[in-house]
Picture (tube, rainbow, N blue to C red):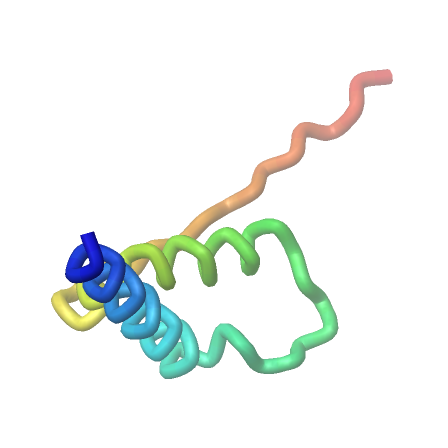
Length: 66
């Protein structure tokens, strides 16, 4: 069980490194659900980022009807 936890921690750390390399942690001032989702998915994808995975999230909020 400890080995599995270590593998998960290493996987997530590599995902954070990939998100950092892509510049997702720069302070842009305009945070959105899409940006947060992209950072989370990139982190969860971990080492797959270096194999070509480029996860992106979009948050399409419908306009209210009148």
